[in-house]
Image (cartoon, rainbow, N blue to C red; front, side, top):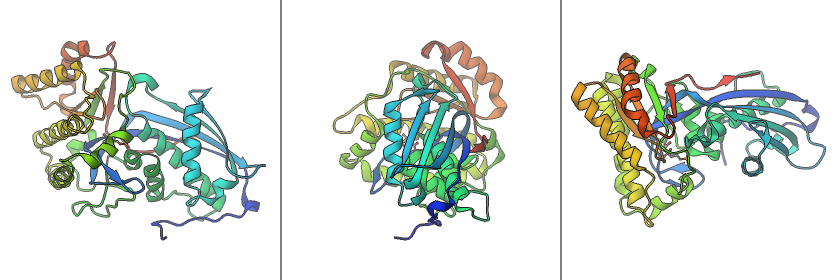
Length: 358
Ligand code: PMV
């Protein structure tokens, strides 16, 4: 099997101790990845904004393991967390083929989010991206390669194996994952950054309005799997790829209205696919629909370019250009906050990707 990156085969004598730390943001897909095959391969290309304020900080201290295999301890927000630890252990054990050194290390991992864990916003993208950055840096340090820069394609490949959408959190501004003619260098194996983007999209806002902090009734993993039996799936994969072509042009032209229409159509399609899965399920809440109605009415009445998208959950992502920040703030405070869970909003913006913490 050939890989699109170098595999380091370190000898156990080269293993020292060390500590790495990375802050990685979440991302919000405009064209959604929904449906997968093989080992975390997407059925269609997807494209997202990399965010900045919703992030995960992960530190890993490493040393040679005295016992055989991978040793691990895991703290989440400074507390032991067995379910997360088990998930991370099985993920790391599943990628030893790419990072043979992991089989000889003990890792003390400590992770925390900038947003409350119970806020209902997907944390797997930022969490998996941060772990992937740390693992690639450790691998690089032990290999003593000439370059100190980690290979972002390799990091994105690793993050994808943990959570598909995490692959896109590693690139600045806008990321695309999945092979597509309109995206230069694109691949099903890792995400790349999107070139030729109008400045208006480089400072776009995403206010995440929390409608419900409850755990999702159907996980993303189960949702992807249900696409296999969905009678609309083939049409959907084609539609998503066609929308990538359209979005690429829109991003270049700076047409905010066309962007907003496409973003909303994608959100509605994602949730329509859930509703017509077998079994059918609904992740939107009454507050989600109320906010959608309010956003559309406000836009029609005032002409202010404010749009929404949705993730696989009930929370509204309010998307708007920097030029209407004041109008958006007033609208959120006066009209949308009453529909949120205890006034919870995470004010986010397009961001620059991973930052080192050590
Ligand atoms: O990365 P996953 O397996 O949690 O899937 C995420 C899917 C969506 O968030 C709904 C869409 C996307 O492209 O991020």
